Length: 366
Image (cartoon, rainbow, N blue to C red; front, side):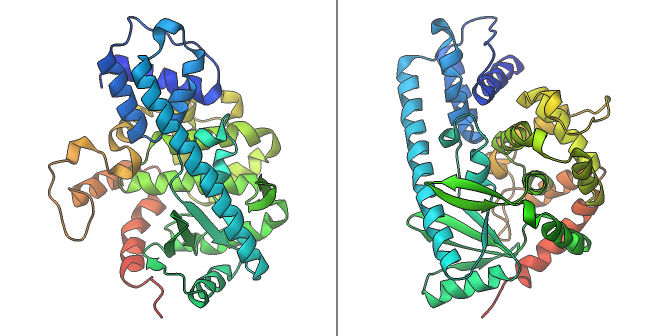
């Protein structure tokens, strides 16, 4: 996609995300242009957000009716999937709670609630973390109920329930640096009384306090940037979360959290990208970032990598290994290490060590 069309793409993304603005075009978009925009909206899992921009466009700016119909069908599928996910979230949360297990909903549908049109956010799976030893309790509960699950690297397990993929995580946050574990546990205890509740189908579902939701969403972005990349949807998540909760958080405390976890330098990059490309108002940024912060290089990597790096056309013909799912994995991991080690050195250095440990030694075994 050339830069001019990419600019149109980001205009549409911002209009759909914020429900504001007008599309500025130098010339009308061709059918090929629209197919390209739709392709990248799917790669970046923001097809529902781009679709939401259409109501703000002039009649002569809209995609052809045949393409709009295909787009509407896909958005209808997203809505149906989200409705089913919500039903499963309520059923699982209620079942766990009735059995003395205290789950906390991570990211996903929890973050979707901060969107202008929540059921247009493309969702992948349901992620649960748990209070204290709840992970072990939940794992035993699955065994007792003969629910087939798989222990996975990264200190997690997964399974399908009513055709919805579910993951349980031992760790609330995607930090690789083991030296931060005690501090993160203190944060969870300190903010326990400030946990939020999201009403899904009239059932209050437990969420983390706002400051910790931001930490959770943003470290998840960094985790995938250090590996193979991540889609624009997760940046939209961060932007909508900041925009919604900025007046209800302790910004000084949040800055201190970022500083103590070694993220602050990278958080400045994230904040500038959210403002420059995603359209987050500067007033929703909790603290200023250096004026000379450069983020074009990071946006370029995000753009090419797409959702978790599976669609990166730069590596389509790369070498494949039986140890990795993506082509040219070694080269890609090394390149991303070099990019991010100066912005989040502790996480970048800890990644290969903890990843290897979790893959071969960190999985639960009965």
